[in-house]
Length: 125
Image (cartoon, rainbow, N blue to C red; front, side, top):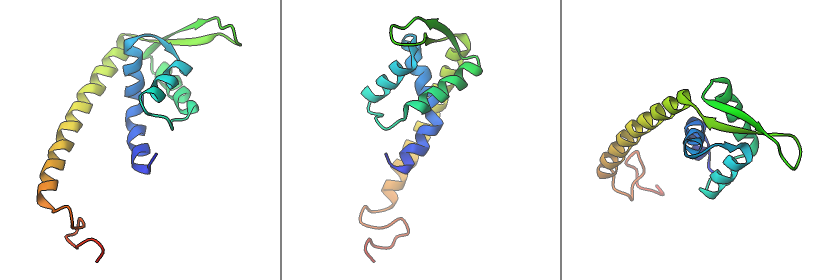
């Protein structure tokens, strides 16, 4: 995963996790597996657990401990009212950013021919 992707994910991963939990309650490994199924293969499991802890501390989820056949009880996270409000705010912010970024992309690609560098210097010069 490139540096740009990593930096962008840092700002959006919490919202992505809230979106996953909006569909149904899940425990950490299920969330990680879902992210991998969606193409986010390089996100470390530890990153997900750290975000889940932060989301829990902020009161955005309810947590239920469910017995596990393999080891200690699992923490199953479900989105609560505060979490749904945070998710709605995330989607609103996301829509705003995407709209403005797409507008910038459309206007900037019209301004610079694809065979020139951003400064107007021909590539390779």
